[in-house]
Length: 376
Image 1: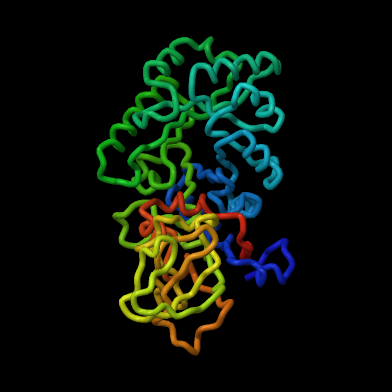
Image 2: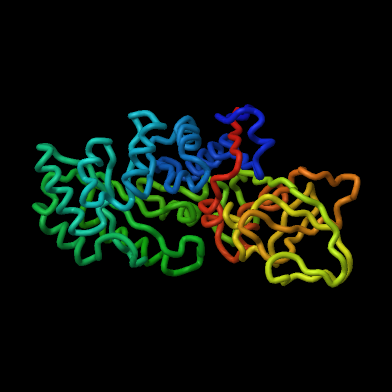
């Protein structure tokens, strides 16, 4: 294993927290998902800076693992991503171009997802300006009521080919609303609506499943799947006894101070946590400015080895207090590291404690960490 970082060797010792991202694990997760899908093409979603983990490092690792299709949310994300992957890779912009960004889509070879009649018309006009057909994806709303053409709008589009003059539609797509709940009948409904829509434009590639949708089975895979969160180790649904995806990160923060809290004394803002008996506590250099949500107080924890360290009181902007009473005193040192996410406490555990989902935990990760990237 090699540790890849652009920072000098001493930077990790100065930082309040260290985020370690295992690029080999991300690549392994991609290969696992691709294998599950057989002959179906497998893209990689790297929007929001690869879910907070760093697209500059993650995207090349995914390309080395075999990814040739990448999805982002915004045009500027696509322009930035072009710096990190080879020209052979295709980048698709989920939100499509804003009116002022159509030319930039062309200039940087970005394929837009067209979600509305207005976007379709703007892209058609851009094709006229360019003097040649332009590649695009058409999104259909199959029941989530978020992005895409309504069934009636799509039927009109299929019946009026002139509305697509100059647009080379290479993919029809939609998005599942309840894929993380495998027994939800909405999945079956959306799958059938996707089939009905694709029958109106036969011969086109189709994409419905993102991360959780892959695990619904081959009936949902169609021509292309678009895993995002699953690449980064987030469990696809709660029904799986074991998450088949590898954890990809470790977040460790430094202890700034060790102290004793006497019986009856409070801790943190509002003194919401009062000790029943004396206890040892550590002030740790991570807070809600770093993505450790205030909602984590009460249920959240840190870990020292296999010892759980409950959070005491409220999370502050730059620090949190944890109970280290169960750690042997001889093991305690100021400046030692404790894990907020690690071998005993994954992203999904941290999300459950905070009353949220793993997606939010990852994309909320702060910018003050020292970051190490591990690759073989």
